[in-house]
Amino acid sequence: MPRGVPAAASTAALLTIPETDFLSTYHVQQSENRQFHFCLRGDKHEMIFQSEEFWSKQGALNAIDSCRTHSPHEQNYVRRITEQGSPYFVLRGGHDEVLGVSEPYSSEAARENGIVSCKVNGRGSAENDETVGRARRQR
Image 1 (cartoon, rainbow, N blue to C red):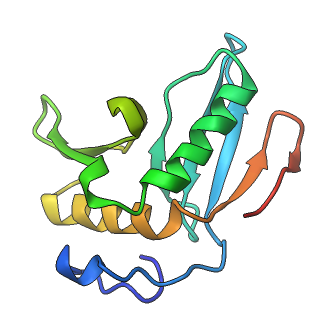
Image 2: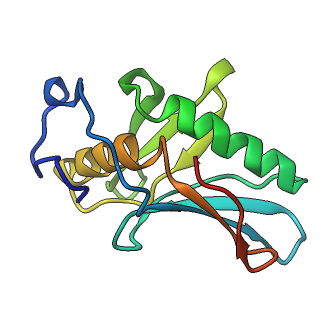
């Protein structure tokens, strides 16, 4: 759980999200089919969400920038349930495109904590470009 956010934080309590110190990271990777994707990992290396695949690395990097813009805002989160009954969330950007999908959670409360973590960590995380083995930039 991110520092400064209580485990059972309500949406109203999220109006002022504390600054992070970039312990979370966007990890840019290339898959076997040579497409690029990224995931956002929290300060304890837990998976927050993963992107879809992009034909270019620049496409993935542009999507990360969009995540930074859209992740702090409640209206960009869609709450869903898998066919097996597990809650998860989708982060959407401008034009309603999917930026990232979380892993399934064990409960709706756990999903809400994941959304809080995404709001806090998504806006300022560093990037780790694992396609070349070095960090890219920190904003």
